[in-house]
Image 1 (cartoon, rainbow over the protein chains, first blue to last red):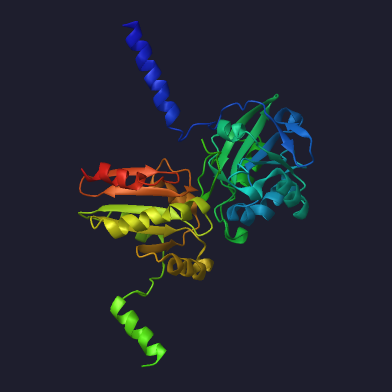
Image 2 (image 1 turned 180 degrees about the vertical axis):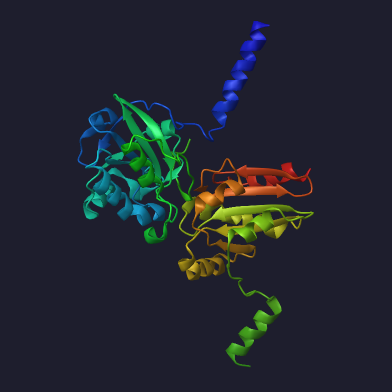
Length: 203
Length: 158
């Protein structure tokens, strides 16, 4: 009987390990610390941001047209919210083997060419993107620092118009961070958007 | 007979350059109607874009199924920006796509992604298969391998 229970537990685990959809952090979850290489060549950890009120973490890349469409808005979020305690951290999860334009050297060049003021990290093993359950680029996770623990407060898109910032009438990330700064809970804490699939390493 | 006429005659008999169709620019309402339409056939709706490498890679499988399986209706829903319509039409012609191509000009993604499928994160490629006779659906958010589409259709046809 115990064997049967163990077996069904095992099957259960195997079954859910196979369905990757919706795995990863949900709103309210505490994020495990990670450390990745920044475009300045130094290692940077989430815990290095412990003095900030939170961070706007964005899975992003060089090559996706949707990331490119949001480039100025991502820089704008950093310019606007870094002074208020919510800097942007961009993380590129794409496998350079499948997306050569996303290699570390290309990231360094891209950040320089576009005058990045925010950090831009390479998720070489893709473990951070997996832990977060990121699926596409750009994919945003707003994290709130609660006494050294980073908790997920918002997951999703930057706003509701990819191609035209001026036409976006719902600024999800801006609204979420502003709510957090006022000590409130964001009204919209999860959205979806079309984006480029993360280029996972071939299994 | 000059060369030009000969060419025309040849085209006439081979019937080849079947005038390449063009993408139809639609709002979600139209797509919603296709998703919920009554049909004896299996409806396959593939979400793609010309800029999406994995999407372009799997398109031949959809082309193949559309050509080989008369019991399946294939719709290719392009998520390219409407400003890129010419690029989409050139692509359709170059690849000889015969299935209906709809360019979904609907920016407020969050308002319709869940209506396609609640499990969809919004990443493409993604494919929705519907057997409207049984109401059964399948949704896959990934690049399909060779033969996988046929398998999914077979599972739905029963």
